[in-house]
Image (cartoon, rainbow, N blue to C red; front, side, top):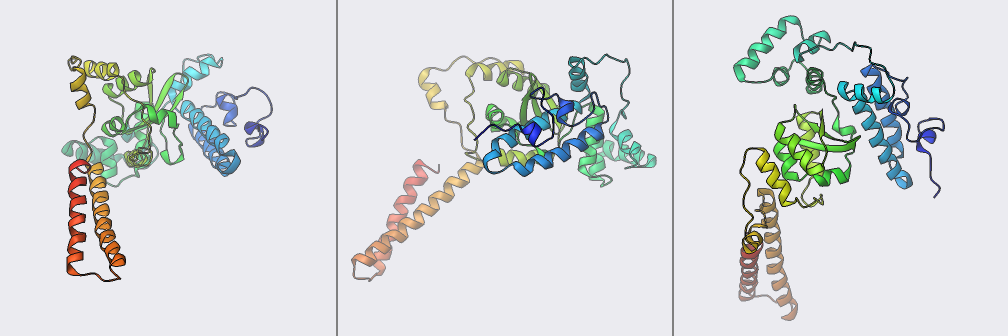
Length: 340
Protein backbone atom coordinates (compact mmCIF):
# COMPACT_ATOMS: atom_id res chain seq x y z
CA UNK A 1 0.00 0.00 0.00
CA UNK A 2 1.44 3.38 -0.99
CA UNK A 3 2.04 5.91 1.77
CA UNK A 4 -0.74 8.49 2.00
CA UNK A 5 -0.18 12.15 2.86
CA UNK A 6 -2.94 12.42 5.46
CA UNK A 7 -2.34 16.14 5.94
CA UNK A 8 -3.07 16.83 2.28
CA UNK A 9 -5.67 14.16 1.57
CA UNK A 10 -7.71 14.43 4.75
CA UNK A 11 -7.09 17.97 6.01
CA UNK A 12 -6.45 19.82 2.75
CA UNK A 13 -3.05 21.12 3.87
CA UNK A 14 -0.84 21.90 0.84
CA UNK A 15 2.52 20.23 0.47
CA UNK A 16 5.20 21.69 2.67
CA UNK A 17 6.64 21.04 6.11
CA UNK A 18 5.74 17.64 7.50
CA UNK A 19 4.49 17.48 10.14
CA UNK A 20 2.97 20.96 9.87
CA UNK A 21 3.05 23.36 12.80
CA UNK A 22 0.16 23.43 15.25
CA UNK A 23 -1.57 26.39 13.62
CA UNK A 24 -1.42 24.94 10.13
CA UNK A 25 -2.54 21.54 11.44
CA UNK A 26 -5.63 23.04 13.09
CA UNK A 27 -6.31 25.29 10.07
CA UNK A 28 -5.71 28.48 12.08
CA UNK A 29 -4.00 31.75 11.30
CA UNK A 30 -0.53 31.97 12.79
CA UNK A 31 -0.56 32.88 16.50
CA UNK A 32 -4.35 32.64 16.82
CA UNK A 33 -5.27 33.51 20.43
CA UNK A 34 -9.01 32.83 20.43
CA UNK A 35 -9.38 29.65 22.50
CA UNK A 36 -12.95 29.07 21.31
CA UNK A 37 -11.74 29.24 17.70
CA UNK A 38 -8.91 26.80 18.47
CA UNK A 39 -11.24 24.32 20.16
CA UNK A 40 -13.90 24.73 17.48
CA UNK A 41 -11.47 23.86 14.69
CA UNK A 42 -10.13 20.93 16.71
CA UNK A 43 -13.60 19.45 17.17
CA UNK A 44 -14.41 19.74 13.47
CA UNK A 45 -11.14 18.15 12.38
CA UNK A 46 -11.34 15.47 15.05
CA UNK A 47 -14.79 14.43 13.83
CA UNK A 48 -13.62 14.48 10.21
CA UNK A 49 -10.54 12.29 10.81
CA UNK A 50 -12.55 9.78 12.85
CA UNK A 51 -14.34 8.82 9.63
CA UNK A 52 -11.12 7.17 8.51
CA UNK A 53 -10.52 5.38 11.84
CA UNK A 54 -11.26 1.92 10.44
CA UNK A 55 -9.82 -0.50 7.91
CA UNK A 56 -6.52 0.07 6.18
CA UNK A 57 -6.00 3.60 7.53
CA UNK A 58 -6.65 2.81 11.20
CA UNK A 59 -3.08 3.51 12.37
CA UNK A 60 -2.69 6.67 10.28
CA UNK A 61 -5.97 8.05 11.58
CA UNK A 62 -5.09 7.31 15.21
CA UNK A 63 -1.69 8.97 14.83
CA UNK A 64 -3.29 12.04 13.26
CA UNK A 65 -5.96 12.22 15.98
CA UNK A 66 -3.17 12.28 18.56
CA UNK A 67 -1.36 15.04 16.67
CA UNK A 68 -4.54 17.12 16.59
CA UNK A 69 -5.06 16.59 20.33
CA UNK A 70 -1.47 17.58 21.16
CA UNK A 71 -1.79 20.74 19.06
CA UNK A 72 -5.08 21.73 20.71
CA UNK A 73 -3.81 21.06 24.23
CA UNK A 74 -0.67 23.10 23.58
CA UNK A 75 -2.47 26.10 22.09
CA UNK A 76 -5.12 26.20 24.82
CA UNK A 77 -2.61 26.06 27.68
CA UNK A 78 -1.39 29.66 28.28
CA UNK A 79 2.14 28.75 29.40
CA UNK A 80 2.63 26.04 26.76
CA UNK A 81 1.29 28.31 24.02
CA UNK A 82 3.61 31.18 25.00
CA UNK A 83 6.58 28.80 24.88
CA UNK A 84 5.49 27.36 21.54
CA UNK A 85 4.83 30.79 20.00
CA UNK A 86 8.27 31.97 21.06
CA UNK A 87 9.82 28.95 19.36
CA UNK A 88 7.87 29.94 16.23
CA UNK A 89 9.37 33.45 16.27
CA UNK A 90 6.59 35.43 17.95
CA UNK A 91 7.86 38.52 19.71
CA UNK A 92 6.62 39.02 23.28
CA UNK A 93 4.15 41.93 23.33
CA UNK A 94 4.23 42.43 27.08
CA UNK A 95 0.49 41.89 27.28
CA UNK A 96 -1.67 38.85 27.34
CA UNK A 97 -5.21 37.63 27.21
CA UNK A 98 -7.18 38.51 30.31
CA UNK A 99 -9.02 35.61 31.87
CA UNK A 100 -11.29 35.61 34.93
CA UNK A 101 -9.06 34.84 37.90
CA UNK A 102 -11.37 32.52 39.88
CA UNK A 103 -13.91 29.77 39.21
CA UNK A 104 -16.81 31.95 40.33
CA UNK A 105 -15.68 34.97 38.29
CA UNK A 106 -15.37 32.78 35.21
CA UNK A 107 -18.90 31.40 35.64
CA UNK A 108 -20.33 34.83 36.37
CA UNK A 109 -18.59 36.34 33.33
CA UNK A 110 -20.30 33.71 31.18
CA UNK A 111 -23.61 34.39 32.93
CA UNK A 112 -23.79 30.79 34.15
CA UNK A 113 -24.33 32.07 37.70
CA UNK A 114 -25.44 35.46 38.97
CA UNK A 115 -23.47 37.80 41.20
CA UNK A 116 -25.93 37.08 43.99
CA UNK A 117 -25.25 33.35 43.70
CA UNK A 118 -21.51 33.89 44.20
CA UNK A 119 -22.09 34.57 47.90
CA UNK A 120 -24.38 31.56 48.20
CA UNK A 121 -21.75 29.31 46.65
CA UNK A 122 -19.03 30.61 48.96
CA UNK A 123 -21.17 29.93 52.05
CA UNK A 124 -22.13 26.46 50.79
CA UNK A 125 -18.48 25.61 50.05
CA UNK A 126 -17.19 26.89 53.40
CA UNK A 127 -19.86 25.01 55.36
CA UNK A 128 -19.03 21.68 53.69
CA UNK A 129 -15.30 22.07 53.10
CA UNK A 130 -15.69 21.98 49.31
CA UNK A 131 -13.87 23.75 46.52
CA UNK A 132 -15.91 26.27 44.55
CA UNK A 133 -15.74 23.93 41.54
CA UNK A 134 -17.33 21.09 43.50
CA UNK A 135 -19.79 23.40 45.25
CA UNK A 136 -21.41 24.77 42.09
CA UNK A 137 -21.81 21.23 40.76
CA UNK A 138 -23.36 19.91 43.98
CA UNK A 139 -25.71 22.90 44.07
CA UNK A 140 -26.68 22.01 40.47
CA UNK A 141 -26.00 25.56 39.31
CA UNK A 142 -23.80 24.54 36.35
CA UNK A 143 -22.88 21.42 34.43
CA UNK A 144 -19.71 19.57 35.52
CA UNK A 145 -17.94 20.42 32.24
CA UNK A 146 -18.58 24.16 32.75
CA UNK A 147 -17.12 23.87 36.26
CA UNK A 148 -14.10 22.04 34.84
CA UNK A 149 -13.52 24.83 32.32
CA UNK A 150 -13.80 27.41 35.11
CA UNK A 151 -11.17 25.63 37.20
CA UNK A 152 -8.91 25.34 34.15
CA UNK A 153 -9.19 29.10 33.66
CA UNK A 154 -8.34 29.74 37.31
CA UNK A 155 -5.29 27.46 37.22
CA UNK A 156 -4.14 28.56 33.77
CA UNK A 157 -4.45 25.03 32.36
CA UNK A 158 -6.02 23.44 29.34
CA UNK A 159 -8.98 21.11 29.71
CA UNK A 160 -10.03 18.10 27.73
CA UNK A 161 -13.00 15.86 27.10
CA UNK A 162 -11.47 12.40 27.43
CA UNK A 163 -14.14 10.86 25.20
CA UNK A 164 -12.39 12.62 22.28
CA UNK A 165 -8.93 11.35 23.28
CA UNK A 166 -7.09 8.21 22.26
CA UNK A 167 -4.19 7.86 24.75
CA UNK A 168 -0.90 6.44 23.52
CA UNK A 169 -0.63 2.76 24.52
CA UNK A 170 3.11 2.98 25.13
CA UNK A 171 2.49 5.86 27.55
CA UNK A 172 -0.27 4.00 29.38
CA UNK A 173 2.12 1.08 29.87
CA UNK A 174 4.64 3.34 31.59
CA UNK A 175 2.32 4.24 34.48
CA UNK A 176 0.98 1.35 36.62
CA UNK A 177 -2.71 1.01 37.38
CA UNK A 178 -2.15 1.53 41.10
CA UNK A 179 -0.61 4.94 40.38
CA UNK A 180 -3.44 6.23 38.19
CA UNK A 181 -6.01 4.90 40.69
CA UNK A 182 -4.24 6.51 43.63
CA UNK A 183 -3.94 9.93 41.97
CA UNK A 184 -7.09 9.74 39.81
CA UNK A 185 -5.21 10.62 36.64
CA UNK A 186 -4.72 9.32 33.10
CA UNK A 187 -1.48 9.64 31.07
CA UNK A 188 -2.21 10.74 27.51
CA UNK A 189 0.81 11.51 25.32
CA UNK A 190 4.40 12.61 25.25
CA UNK A 191 4.68 16.06 23.67
CA UNK A 192 7.84 18.13 23.20
CA UNK A 193 9.59 16.81 26.29
CA UNK A 194 6.52 16.75 28.55
CA UNK A 195 4.18 13.96 29.62
CA UNK A 196 0.60 15.11 29.21
CA UNK A 197 -1.53 13.78 32.06
CA UNK A 198 -5.27 14.30 32.56
CA UNK A 199 -6.08 15.24 36.18
CA UNK A 200 -9.24 16.25 38.00
CA UNK A 201 -7.42 19.02 39.87
CA UNK A 202 -3.99 20.60 40.15
CA UNK A 203 -1.62 17.64 40.54
CA UNK A 204 0.18 16.94 43.79
CA UNK A 205 3.95 17.17 44.11
CA UNK A 206 3.99 13.40 44.69
CA UNK A 207 2.34 12.75 41.31
CA UNK A 208 4.67 15.13 39.48
CA UNK A 209 7.69 13.40 41.04
CA UNK A 210 6.29 9.96 40.21
CA UNK A 211 5.80 10.91 36.55
CA UNK A 212 9.25 12.48 36.33
CA UNK A 213 10.98 9.39 37.73
CA UNK A 214 9.00 6.85 35.72
CA UNK A 215 9.01 8.73 32.40
CA UNK A 216 12.27 10.70 32.70
CA UNK A 217 10.44 13.93 31.86
CA UNK A 218 8.25 16.46 33.65
CA UNK A 219 4.48 16.26 33.40
CA UNK A 220 2.10 18.87 32.02
CA UNK A 221 -1.36 18.48 33.54
CA UNK A 222 -4.61 19.02 31.66
CA UNK A 223 -7.92 19.07 33.49
CA UNK A 224 -10.73 16.58 32.90
CA UNK A 225 -13.94 15.55 34.62
CA UNK A 226 -13.38 13.17 37.56
CA UNK A 227 -16.10 10.90 36.20
CA UNK A 228 -14.43 10.75 32.78
CA UNK A 229 -11.06 9.93 34.34
CA UNK A 230 -12.54 7.06 36.36
CA UNK A 231 -14.31 5.70 33.27
CA UNK A 232 -11.10 5.93 31.23
CA UNK A 233 -9.11 4.12 33.95
CA UNK A 234 -11.69 1.33 33.96
CA UNK A 235 -11.46 1.14 30.17
CA UNK A 236 -7.72 1.36 29.58
CA UNK A 237 -6.56 -0.35 32.78
CA UNK A 238 -9.01 -3.24 32.87
CA UNK A 239 -7.46 -6.39 34.41
CA UNK A 240 -5.09 -7.91 31.85
CA UNK A 241 -5.43 -5.00 29.41
CA UNK A 242 -2.10 -3.32 30.13
CA UNK A 243 1.42 -4.61 29.61
CA UNK A 244 2.83 -2.51 32.42
CA UNK A 245 6.58 -2.15 32.50
CA UNK A 246 8.23 -3.51 35.61
CA UNK A 247 9.24 -0.76 37.99
CA UNK A 248 12.97 -0.76 38.82
CA UNK A 249 13.71 -0.88 42.55
CA UNK A 250 15.59 2.41 42.23
CA UNK A 251 12.46 4.20 41.01
CA UNK A 252 10.27 3.00 43.89
CA UNK A 253 13.02 3.80 46.39
CA UNK A 254 13.49 7.28 44.94
CA UNK A 255 9.73 7.93 45.09
CA UNK A 256 9.62 6.78 48.70
CA UNK A 257 12.62 8.91 49.63
CA UNK A 258 11.17 11.93 47.83
CA UNK A 259 7.92 11.69 49.81
CA UNK A 260 9.73 11.65 53.14
CA UNK A 261 10.08 7.88 53.56
CA UNK A 262 13.33 6.23 54.47
CA UNK A 263 15.12 4.21 51.88
CA UNK A 264 14.78 0.55 52.75
CA UNK A 265 17.69 -1.85 52.72
CA UNK A 266 17.60 -4.41 49.95
CA UNK A 267 15.98 -7.65 51.11
CA UNK A 268 17.95 -10.89 50.88
CA UNK A 269 17.32 -12.80 47.64
CA UNK A 270 15.01 -15.37 49.27
CA UNK A 271 12.97 -12.77 51.13
CA UNK A 272 12.64 -10.65 47.99
CA UNK A 273 11.42 -13.64 46.03
CA UNK A 274 8.71 -14.31 48.61
CA UNK A 275 7.54 -10.69 48.63
CA UNK A 276 7.58 -10.19 44.86
CA UNK A 277 4.02 -11.43 44.41
CA UNK A 278 1.75 -8.51 45.21
CA UNK A 279 -1.52 -9.29 47.07
CA UNK A 280 -4.61 -9.75 44.96
CA UNK A 281 -7.12 -6.94 44.73
CA UNK A 282 -10.72 -7.51 45.82
CA UNK A 283 -11.76 -7.53 42.16
CA UNK A 284 -9.18 -10.21 41.30
CA UNK A 285 -10.27 -12.31 44.31
CA UNK A 286 -13.89 -12.17 43.13
CA UNK A 287 -12.91 -13.19 39.61
CA UNK A 288 -10.89 -16.17 40.87
CA UNK A 289 -13.70 -17.29 43.17
CA UNK A 290 -16.20 -17.07 40.32
CA UNK A 291 -13.93 -19.17 38.08
CA UNK A 292 -13.51 -21.70 40.91
CA UNK A 293 -17.28 -22.07 41.26
CA UNK A 294 -17.70 -22.51 37.50
CA UNK A 295 -15.00 -25.22 37.33
CA UNK A 296 -16.54 -26.96 40.37
CA UNK A 297 -19.99 -27.03 38.78
CA UNK A 298 -18.67 -28.42 35.52
CA UNK A 299 -16.59 -31.02 37.36
CA UNK A 300 -19.72 -32.24 39.14
CA UNK A 301 -21.86 -32.21 35.99
CA UNK A 302 -19.10 -33.83 33.93
CA UNK A 303 -18.63 -36.67 36.41
CA UNK A 304 -22.36 -37.45 36.54
CA UNK A 305 -22.62 -37.20 32.75
CA UNK A 306 -19.72 -39.59 32.25
CA UNK A 307 -21.32 -42.13 34.60
CA UNK A 308 -24.62 -41.65 32.75
CA UNK A 309 -23.11 -42.67 29.41
CA UNK A 310 -20.96 -45.49 30.85
CA UNK A 311 -23.83 -46.98 32.86
CA UNK A 312 -26.36 -47.49 30.06
CA UNK A 313 -27.90 -44.03 30.59
CA UNK A 314 -28.81 -44.66 34.20
CA UNK A 315 -27.82 -42.56 37.21
CA UNK A 316 -28.45 -43.48 40.83
CA UNK A 317 -28.23 -41.38 43.99
CA UNK A 318 -24.85 -42.99 44.64
CA UNK A 319 -23.59 -41.79 41.28
CA UNK A 320 -24.91 -38.27 41.95
CA UNK A 321 -23.16 -38.33 45.32
CA UNK A 322 -19.93 -39.36 43.58
CA UNK A 323 -20.25 -36.33 41.28
CA UNK A 324 -20.67 -34.04 44.30
CA UNK A 325 -17.59 -35.58 45.92
CA UNK A 326 -15.50 -34.93 42.80
CA UNK A 327 -16.81 -31.36 42.64
CA UNK A 328 -15.96 -30.87 46.32
CA UNK A 329 -12.42 -32.10 45.79
CA UNK A 330 -11.95 -29.76 42.81
CA UNK A 331 -13.35 -26.83 44.81
CA UNK A 332 -11.05 -27.58 47.75
CA UNK A 333 -7.95 -27.74 45.56
CA UNK A 334 -8.74 -24.54 43.67
CA UNK A 335 -9.67 -22.70 46.85
CA UNK A 336 -6.37 -23.74 48.41
CA UNK A 337 -4.00 -23.05 45.52
CA UNK A 338 -5.84 -20.58 43.23
CA UNK A 339 -8.66 -18.62 44.88
CA UNK A 340 -6.97 -17.97 48.21
